[in-house]
Amino acid sequence: MAKKLSDEQCRENYTQLRKLFDRIIPDAARFEMVYACGVDVGMVDAVVIRVTSYGYSSYAVGFDTNANELVILPINPDLSEHGQAYYLKHSEISKAKQSFISKEITIQDNRLPQKYIQLNVQAQINQDPDNVVLLVKQNEEAKRFLAFFKNQYKK
Image (cartoon, rainbow, N blue to C red; front, side, top):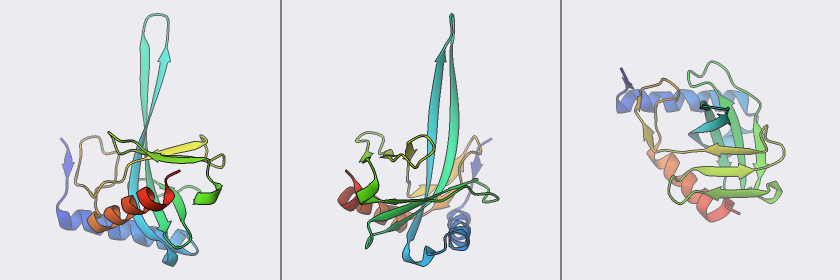
């Protein structure tokens, strides 16, 4: 059965994410922050069958409109662990784009583990049948991030 949360619980998850971001990122106060998730789809063709695997990722994404910079912090959806933060200035990245149809954001940079990162920022995620994402409500934050990316960060 799908996990579903109220708006208040989703907003509390966002608040807890912000607290984690503030604790981990030394200069966190200069960044606005959103939750982003991504899915990597891998396919392997064998002689008779095709095997498809899915890898789910969660991120706390900080964005500084003055410095035109992102910081991407990989996290576990239960906020128990985090990975290395990646600071990405617009002037230093190879490419940044947003898909017209799916609205998925792709950023290419050689400092990233796979040389790129794909993420999706939604205003609200309140249901998760597979327990792979953090359920959040971030209406205004998502709107500001998407405007920042579209107007200042895309290459």
